[in-house]
Image (cartoon, rainbow, N blue to C red):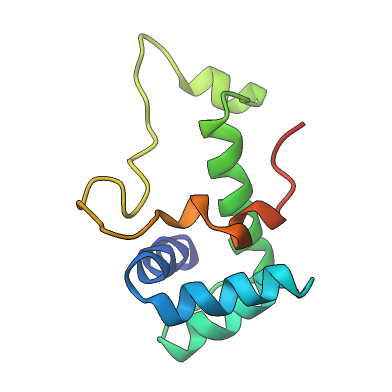
Amino acid sequence: MSHEDVARFLELVSSESAIEDALNVAATQQGDVAEIAVRLAEEHGLHFSRDEFSGAVEAFHRVHSGELDDAELEGVSGGFNPQPEPPAISGGATQNPWFSQPWSKKFNWGP
C-alpha cells in the first residue's frame, strides 16, 4: 500500500502547487524534504515512511539517469521497460514534472 501511496503523492505534487512549493521551500532551506513529504501526504490520507519516499525518488532518478543496479539489469530484457512514465509526463501537465523540481534533487541518486 505504501508504494502506491508514494505514487499517488507524486501525482499530487504535480497537480497541486502548494505541495510542490512546500517541498521546494524545504529543499532551499536545507530541510528534511522526505519528512515534509510524509507529513503532507498524511494530510491527504496517504501513508508511507520517509525511507520509502526517499527510495522511490532516488530509484526514479537512478533509472532515468541510465544507472541500473544488478537487480534492475536482470529485469531488463529485449528492450522491455517495466517502469511506467512518471506522473505528469503523459497527462499533458502544464507544470514542470515533479522530478525536475529543486526538492527532488536533494536526494543522492547519481555520481
